[in-house]
Image (cartoon, rainbow, N blue to C red):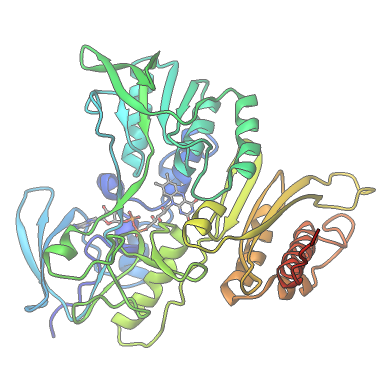
Length: 453
Ligand SMILES: Cc1cc2nc3c(=O)[nH]c(=O)nc-3n(C[C@H](O)[C@H](O)[C@H](O)COP(=O)(O)OP(=O)(O)OC[C@H]3O[C@@H](n4cnc5c(N)ncnc54)[C@H](O)[C@@H]3O)c2cc1C
C-alpha cells in the first residue's frame, strides 16, 4: 500500500511544529497577540501539543520542515523539499488533504520593503516584531488596517507602552464584522485608551531613513513612526492546488463540496485556503476563522479516511475582546446585506446583563438584522463588557437553523439574579425587531388612499 500522506501544509500536523520550525507554525495565531501584550508569559506557552502528541499518541508521521512543491493528481503523489538541505522527495498518497492556509497581504506603496514593516501571521512574525521594537527602542507604531488583527495589535502595543496610530481606508473600524454604529462603541473606548485613528485614510508611502522605517504618509500627511504593521487582509494559499489543476471558486479559494472534496479525485481541502459556504447569505466566501477551519478539517479527515460526513456551512460567528469589551457577531453587516439585495430591517437596543437591583450588571448593546422578505434572522452584533460571546452563539444557532425573528424571540432563556435577567437583551432586541418587521409589513399591505380635491 502506498503511504497515506495527509496534509501538505496541513491541519493538525503542520499546526504543531516544534521549536526549530516555528517559521511555519501557525497554531495558536489567535493567541499570538496575547503574548505581544504580555497576557501570556511566552511564545512557547502558545504551543498546544508537542511532537509526541502526534507521533506517539496519534500515530501521525509528522514531517516538519518539508514543503510541498507540486501535486500530481494523476500519479497521486506530492513532491516536497526539505528546508534543512533543499533535498527533495516524492510522497505517494491514497487520499490527500490540502490545508495550506492563507498569508497576509502587503501594501503596494513605496517603502513597503523597508526594515520595520511587518505582517502578523506566525509566531516568528511576532518574534521579529518584538526584536525590532526592542532594538530600535521604538516608541510609536503605525498599524495599517483596523480589522480584527489590527485592532488586537493596537491594544497589545498600547499595553507594551507604545503610542499607536491606526490607519483605516473605510470610515469605521472592524468593517467586516460590525456596522459602523456598533464599531464606534469600540473605537470610542480605544480612543480613550490612546489609539490615534485615521479613518477614511489612504496609505500613500512608508517613509524610510537608512533603509529603516521612519514615518508613514497617510492622505497627504506624514507621521513619524518606528515600525509599521500591515494588517489589511489575508489571501488563500492556492498556488499548489491551482498548479495541479484543482478548481478554484469565484472568490479565488479552493472550491470544495460539502464533503470537502475538491475537483480532483481523492483530494480534499479545508481551512483558510478554501472558500466556505455561508449559511446566511448562501454564497461561498472567505471566513478565515479557526472555528471554521477545524470543523472543515474534521470533515475532510473523516472522508479522506473512508468515512461519510458533510460540512454544513458556517454563519461566520466571530468573537474578540478589545479594550475590555466583548465584541461578537454573526451574519453579514448591513452594508453587505444591502449589496446582496437583502435590504435588512434592524434594531439596536442596550440592555443589562443582570437585573438592575443586582450589583455587577453591565450594559450590552445588541443589534439584530432581519430579512423583511421572509422575517429570517440575518445577523447579530453584540458589544459590552460581558456576555456578548455566548449570546452571539445563541443567535448564530438561530441563524444556522434559518429561524425567523419570531421563532428566535420565542426561545426561552434562563434567569437568575446574579447571572441573567428575566428578559435577556437579545430577546428584547428580537421583540423590538419583530415589531418593526410587523409594522413595515403592515405598512406595505395597507391600501393606498388617494386624496381628491
Ligand atoms: C493574529 C491572528 C489571530 C487570529 N485569531 C483568531 C481567533 O481568535 N479566532 C478564530 O476563529 N480565528 C482566528 N484567526 C484565524 C485562524 O488562525 C485561521 O483561520 C486558522 O489558523 C486557519 O487554519 P489553517 O490550518 O487553514 O491555516 P494556517 O493556520 O495558516 O496553516 C497553514 C499551514 O500550512 C503550511 N503550508 C502552507 N503551504 C505549505 C506547503 N506548500 N508545504 C507545507 N506546508 C505548507 C503553513 O506554513 C501553515 O503552517 C487568527 C489569525 C491571525 C493571523
